[in-house]
Length: 27
Image (cartoon, rainbow, N blue to C red; front, side):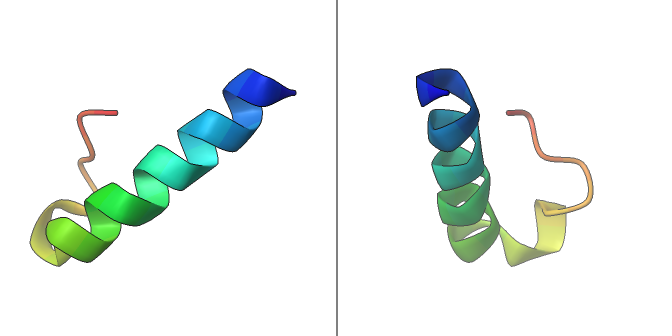
């Protein structure tokens, strides 16, 4: 549960910081 939430949050933040690399997110 925590992992899923963390992953979602990280993905969201990454997409916000790197909207161009949202398709190939390193996370």
